[in-house]
Image 1 (cartoon, rainbow, N blue to C red):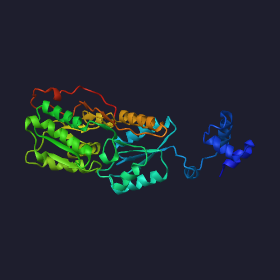
Image 2 (image 1 turned 45 degrees about the horizontal axis):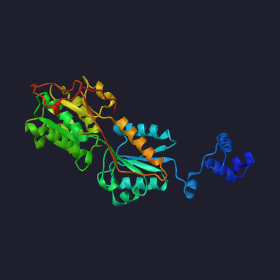
Image 3 (image 1 turned 60 degrees about the horizontal axis):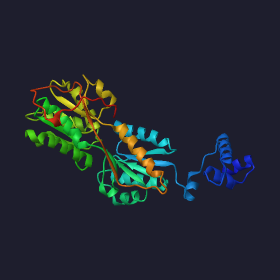
Image 4 (image 1 turned 90 degrees about the horizontal axis):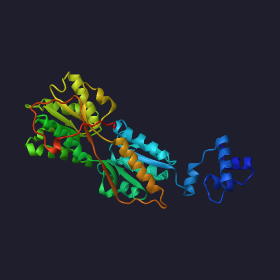
Length: 352
């Protein structure tokens, strides 16, 4: 293994000089720093992260903790954050929890032990007390979901408005039997989406408890099973709004496997605008989410705080606005006068 001593021997300087040069010590001239870096690159020197940690030097790693990397929603976030952070020399390291708070704690412990400079996380429903304690020892920010115990630094989406837009679109098209399949309400995002669905239905007195089905947002077959249950009702829905990307995928799969004609038999409004959604049938009407833009804004704000010496994490909340992307998966039954809340602008979205 190539060491600092090997670089020092090539340049005929002391090992301490090389060490200071690699650490960007102001006592070392820019010319010497450049020579040291050139030789280090030439002979393949790689810094010993463990040794740096023992000297109390922070790494250049930023931890990202998400529930499910299979979800395009989170892969888009990871990509946008990685590109944002690398501009300042930081490297993103990714961890997956499957919304298991014990797994979440294990990842937080490992990242703390690796001396990461900070963490960005989509927290589980109820983080363990030890997770909360560890996160308070370093800069961190919550993304999409927020828990008061983890602080007031949060970047998210207006989940309430997202579902209100979807329901409002179907109401304006004359639907009254509108079902909802979405994430469990123990998650703050799930609770907000369900409330958005209910509030949008409230003025019409069209709410029916049997049309609500909530469950794990990462369960790949939950949407499929929920649709089967809804279609088996004595009075099935004419419209369906979805509150999670994975639920949207599985509902669409179930529609295909049943040979269901959408929107003739059921109008569907999805959640998120995955690339394939525009090609599904005559195109999926869905809620567009500015995921990439949200992640980039989060990353830039986080970098700004990390540049402070010492880093500061003031209270900050940012909520992005969803849009309704109208395609061919919904149809008009009996047109109804739309309220101002039910008049979505046609919009295009490139988010996941």
